[in-house]
Image 1 (cartoon, rainbow, N blue to C red):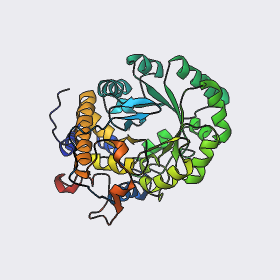
Image 2: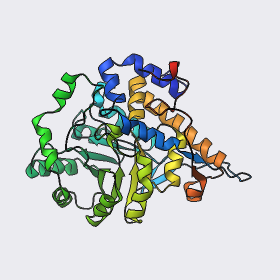
Image 3: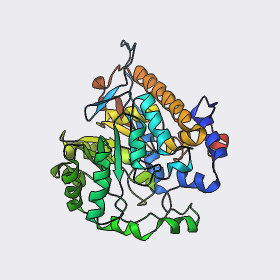
Image 4: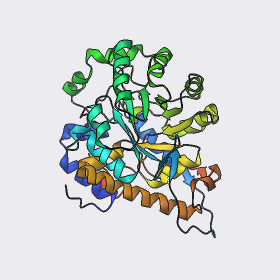
Length: 356
């Protein structure tokens, strides 16, 4: 697929043209009033950058490490179900982009093609994300397949006991997703972690969907290597805090005993820099990834990652740092946002300010 977008704004316009109304609403929508979605963006907008000047910022280095694996930049391609609806080769297109760019991608339980096919698609490290759709034996069988396929990491999603009331979606689409197998997710507890851990051995284990310091501390006590802050892009529980607002308390609770990932509303390089200044190890991108895939498949995602890297380098240089070790909370400050927050508010040059 030929790529002819030069800015994220053009990418969004192309994605809107390429998708049906239902697909567009699936990517962009969230639960009920969509307050959680908007707070994700608003929370990011409530932090300002404090630049330092007269420093040598030639050759900025945005590379980082995640569980001792090098990343070209501290960005993870978050798990997304139904990728096959937005890009011709589904999870393989994301996997190809991650391989080409030097990142780690998360493969969802509900992404096609099969976990084995995606694992065999490329040699770089990738993480399998577990949705529980069966009993403990079902979990063991799934995780054994993951280990056999040589996934580098495993993530358990823990914020999906019930399917959120996603009112932008047509009622028939919501009903089709509330299948009986989802009820097993309601029975996931801290005991479920051991079922998985017993099967994966030394593979990095992550919990995705942590939203409080209390649960972050419990995760560490249960031997979790990565605490992943997420409110599912606002798609599950409405009226949560914005995810970056949760970051300081989670980082404090973890206290260096695990790495911390955060997602939710991250769409610009400045967003990534803010999270890194506040102690994140890496940032996950979801909607941003979907928009790029819809606009141009694998090539579209690679193009988006290049633009994001350029934004990160520019931001690092303009605040006076060349690498992440030079960055800390002194580079950010609380402020008041200047525009209404919504899923497209980081792109104010869209026609009408927003694509609906």
